[in-house]
Amino acid sequence: MRLPFSLVHHSKYFQQLRWVHTMNPTTPPRHLSKTIVIMGPTGSGKSKLSIDLTSRFFTYSEIINSDKIQLYSGLNITTNKITPQDQLGVTHHLLGEINSSHSLTPFEFRSLASGYVTNITSRNKNPFIVGGSNSLIYALLSKKFDPNSNIFHDPKPDTICSERQYNCCFLYVHVAQPTLNQYLTKRVDEMLDSGMLQELHHFFESGSFDSVSPTGLRQAIGIPELEKYIRYTKCTDFNKDAAKAMYDDAITQIKLNTCQLAERQVEKIQRLREIGWDLHKIDATEAVTASLRGERVGEIWERDVVGPSVKIVKRFLEE
Ligand code: ATP
Image 1: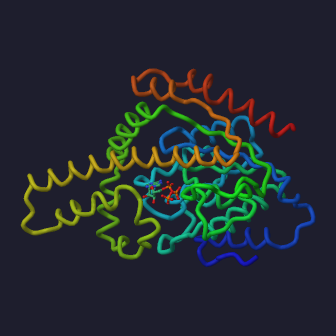
Image 2 (image 1 turned 90 degrees about the vertical axis):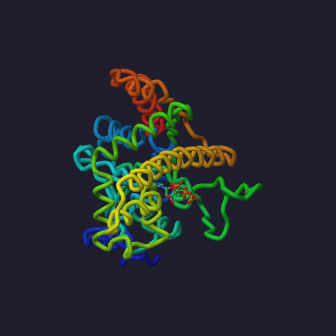
Image 3 (image 1 turned 180 degrees about the vertical axis):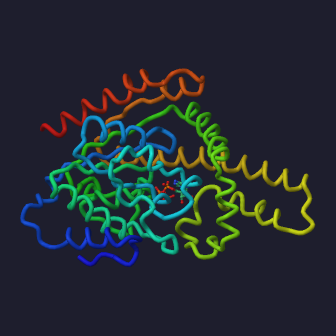
């Protein structure tokens, strides 16, 4: 198989992937690769759960990102990438690894990510696939991926669609939609406090906007919504009130688009269930509710999310 090596940002990945794709007699057959998949809408706590599991319980694990926007380098705040500090030393692959002038197709994602699955498994570790892009998760895991058909739009998908190339355990982190919407609205404000607007100003001023692919990183929520405001603030006849109105509109739109993204992601997860993927639902609603009230979340998160997930993954790995 030929990999799109030129897409990969750093040479260490080039070397790693080249090694993966040479014949390795210790590499288990694909269908035996035990792979854990953490799914869920944006804001449900997938990244936190993945670090809780891989740093404390399943330390022989590495994470492969499956968020289609976080694949690209740059805009770390706007795309809400987990910070190196929060990664707690757990190895992440395909997180900010793809050159943002490129737009990675699901087929290319499948090639790159399956290279990592093979590599991780051949070192006797467990791959954790973590991210909200269900179309990428489907592209990676389905046994026979057809780039020309879309199971998320097809009213009657073929049963072959449910077959997978790896032995998978799925954790679906669920948060009731009204609670999630409240949290996502608050998260946008927190991202702005963390420097999202400054990051986007720099993105436009440095010319990055023109160099990134329109079908890749440029689709990140925040860019289209704030473009008009940011360009307006560069005008010489800049009017403060008009700018404020544009800014407020943009932020309202970002909040709305983020909530809509979460709803679409949940619909796609339902579709995967309908075609027969056995997803273990983990309910994080109470933990998110507590965090919205400013209460201590730790114990509820452990009880409702980490505890049940550890049990499920342990059982799967011992099978
Ligand atoms: P689709 O079929 O709509 O492409 P998908 O499952 O492939 O769906 P999603 O993860 O649902 O992909 O993302 C759809 C869109 O949501 C992206 O194109 C982007 O606009 C936005 N989006 C997704 N993830 C992020 C992110 N981390 N940061 C900013 N925007 C994002």
